[in-house]
Image (tube, rainbow, N blue to C red):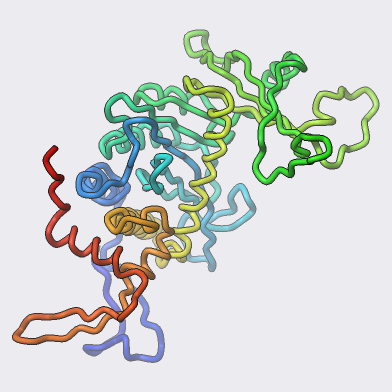
Length: 392
């Protein structure tokens, strides 16, 4: 793929009018598959980066594979594949997979650009299978560690669960509130609910309780019973209920099960305790931060009218994201979990002066620069390699 600028002259950036990019060779689907294999969305680059930087600390204990899609708004009528998505936004749909650990920042292990009007779960099973293999190549699940695939109710399907299990991962999915799930929730005894400290709840000193009234219970549940019996999946259904702040008036003949509480069900096969599994599933929201990071960087716009060119742009954005994360991991300190925008401001956009003496360039950093220790550690590691550990 070759990009050329329509501006003439040796310095087109000096023109006042913005130059227009023309795509000489539009990439095909096969080109994109090859680019994905070499980019951060494929196995090789991510595996190589994990061999040079501590990207997944604690992966020998547990790693989380999060799957979610997002709509990227587009404008005009010349964008191939643009359509109105699930949130009413006209644009293209980007399906992302991230891998993270409790002590590390998320990495992107898969990315796929799709039509704007596609459903969230379209092609998700194959996508999950590829993300699980990529995560393992990057070090997730090492030494018997768990890999937990998390997703919302849009990906609650037998195909997604089967793909995760075939790859050796556990699953934690938000269950749809269908008739079967509601019937299972109705069987939970009132004494089975365990209070939890819900995020942003307020503790009432007078009543000595959390006024959010968040409670959790679990039961055994068999999902996908409409499929052949061999494809039924039996696991745990962890249910969280929260008191409704504004109870709607009752309708004649309507039951009271869902009048007082809001219920959120999680279908999971992890061996983790109930409260910990429910809390870890809520950590799935970390992928929203990845969406925000991409929108603040290369995915701020999709520059081409060609769908395949924009898909290639997404793969390049993923590659830049993972490289920036690797730089933050090597810098250490607060940079290990900083956003990519902060990493670009602290480690890449360096306010330094370059001087040359005897054909040898010298980089003069500003005095009392707060990010010098992290930048110096990144520079030393990148140029000389990590320090040799001391002998025991």
